[in-house]
Image (cartoon, rainbow, N blue to C red; front, side, top):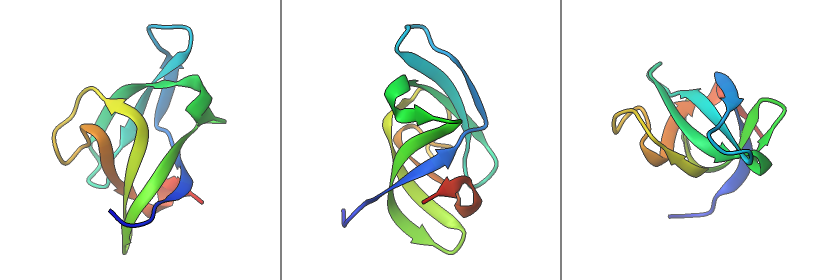
Length: 91
């Protein structure tokens, strides 16, 4: 993997997680599918999740998130990698 750069991902939905130090979030991938996961509050600021951009191609941006998604399929985003639309990324 090459260099990564810090950015923020606009979130579809945020709610309290199972534990006091986390949020449950929903994210929409490039293809319009939704996946969710639990992420530490320290990585969520003003409705955005801190992420690392690993690749950009046209309107597609591949990112690594600071945690793991718990549902979805391989394309929707599972684990800590997801491809999203460029319009949801704030540099």
